[in-house]
Length: 293
Ligand SMILES: [Zn+2]
Image 1 (cartoon, protein in one colour):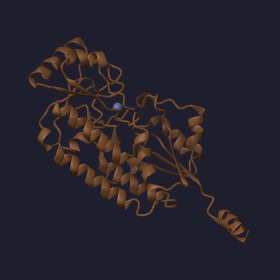
Image 2 (cartoon, protein in one colour):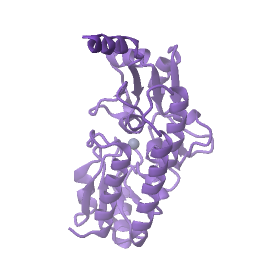
Image 3 (cartoon, protein in one colour):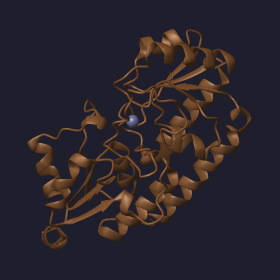
Image 4 (spheres, helix red, strand yellow):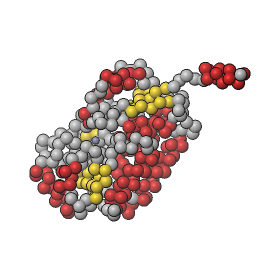
């Protein structure tokens, strides 16, 4: 009996702070989940079926943003629709793009625009005419910076040895894949809107053939001819296909390509933590670039 009361007392006194962290996209949630123990609930704001490039939030999602103990997002430059909601919050928020030293990759400079193409990744237009590549979570270095910023903002409820253990492992996994893929680094590959730059640059992989920087626009007929020629010339045999890519178009461009379906947002792998997901992506690229079945 005495023990029962002791336990009850302990339960009453134990911090009732079951806290909620809301992360805008699944990869950020994957990182945050690894850092905290069971007292902290991590919720992904973006539903698996929502297009990250044309984000429209439901009232329920707006409420989630408002009530989160900590809001983790990419930042106004790439998640503009979230910006007014975050601004109205009175609790803490971490925007990756506000973290000093964050890696910003530019895209849109290495492929032809045929006059009517406009990149529409949240309106991220830099001054020099290039665009900020919004897929910032695919940079391991960025996620290490994020893990630091997040635990500074919410130090309660951390798993022991976090975030240092997680960061060390992240560095290790990235360098393992870099050396493992070194033999395949010169192999060309095909992608639709090239969300992979942060990831593949860090691994030292070749520049891909990019169909269209814009997901909702296919190449015009002139561009199609140029792409098909480039695929032949470079002897492309691997196609990394994101879920929003136009599969029929890719098939027409490269009928013999080995196809590897990978989601840059990790929506297809909800149970994998970020580091296991990196392994999963690395293995996908390896299979595709090797070309063997
Ligand atoms: Zn994208």
